[in-house]
Amino acid sequence: MTDHASPHEAPTPHEIDPCESHHSSQMVSFGTGGWREIIADGFTRLNVRRIAQALADRMHREAVADEGIVVGYDRRFLSAEAAWWTVEVLVANQIPVTVIDRPVPTPTVMWTVLNKDTPYGLCVTASHNPALYNGIKIFTRGGRDADVRVTDALTEQVNALNDDDVQAVDPDTVRSSALVTIQTSINWYLDAIIDSLDMELIRHRHLHIVLDPMFGVAQTSLQTILMTARCQVDVINDRRDPLFGGRMPSPSEGTLDALRNAVIHRHADLGIATDGDADRLGIIDDTGRFLHPNESLVLLYHYLITTKGWTGPAVRNMSTTHLLDRVARAHGQQCHEVPVGFKHISAKMAETGAVIGGESSGGLTVRGHIPGKDGIYAGSLLVEMVAASNKPLSALHQDLVDQYGELVMVERSYRMTTARRAELERRVFVEHQLPQFPAKVENISWRDGCKVYFAGDGWITIRFSGTEPVLRVFCEMPDLEQAQAVLAQVEHLYNLS
Image 1 (cartoon, rainbow, N blue to C red):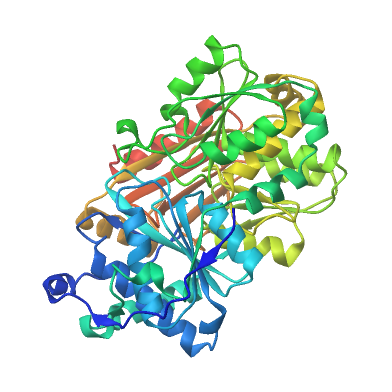
Image 2 (cartoon, rainbow, N blue to C red):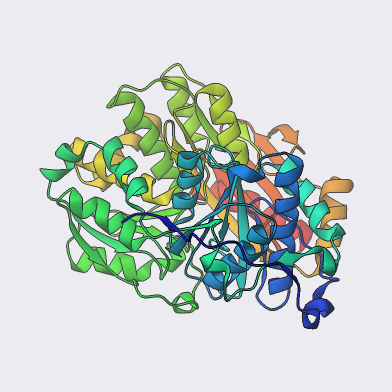
């Protein structure tokens, strides 16, 4: 398949429909994973167009408008429509746009920004948020998540716009604009992953894999890669369902019962799940056990430095396992800790030449790939790791525990009202009210929320989500009993349930 652009001239811009003006008071704010709002509340046509206008204005100020932008979208309700809303605005501002006009993984958009060397890209997605949400992720040159300087500036610019500042071409004629290139192939992205894998090794293991795209966008990409490697691939939950089967499109232990059952009943070697936009990964091993993303991250780092012979540090966020630190130390390397938000991970990886970077929510990337999380690549690399070992995934995990020990993490999310959030922000982050923990405290960091470091490798983090109205608490200790005891102290002090 090839790209194509129409020879016709760009249509004449027109002002936004005044019937939308009652939404103009809605404030837009970017969090750690882009802009996300409830559909028809904050996620409206006007707000999507305001973001596109602010981005267009920024590109003109930076004198990069002529270099163009990449636009993509996932399978959520209104994602395709919202992607074209942004295109209508960008074209009206004389910006060339490459539209990946099919639902694709967010990493595909990031890879395309990198491959085309455009200064910006965007994907309409709310990632793993509930079905009521949609949103926009912004990327900068090199396929990076936009950093806080960019998103803070965009937030300010969007909220300063009046309705009549937003220009858009007619939606019926935008596809015929000479500024629009419609791309339907994703083979370049898939081939880049295939070329990075030891496909010959995988071919001769004849692995049986079950995929669960969780009604999202991963099926075509992962199935193509794995079938090219001669794996037997079964797929569940593959149709488009904007309600995601009535569950969170997040590959966590509590959402993967169907995948677990499929792996066990079909005697598969492993199960791979991805979130709604396929940048996060969840794994079920050959015994039906959920392999926590922390464990996947550590296993892949260990594989890259021991089997593939790579050298270099690792990067994790503040709420990700310290077992990664143990593995790094054992091989004379450092593990760098950064705030939550994958943009911090990718920036530190670029700074340090790290081998791998990841987070406990299932996002990771590897040196030489895109500087952003990619569930398609991570899942494919994990299959290569299993093939290279000639062992079941459960045995690989046990080998890791035998060599480096084990840490146990418990995590909780507590939904907050506005008033409750304000109360806890004051108590925790202003007055620094903390419980008397049952473990010795060595250090407390207020860099991103609150992180308490205990003697040994134990810790607890308390912070508000940057994408949902929830308080998140993560605790990792040498065993489950200690982790639950520390968490209970936090829940008691703040009356969380």
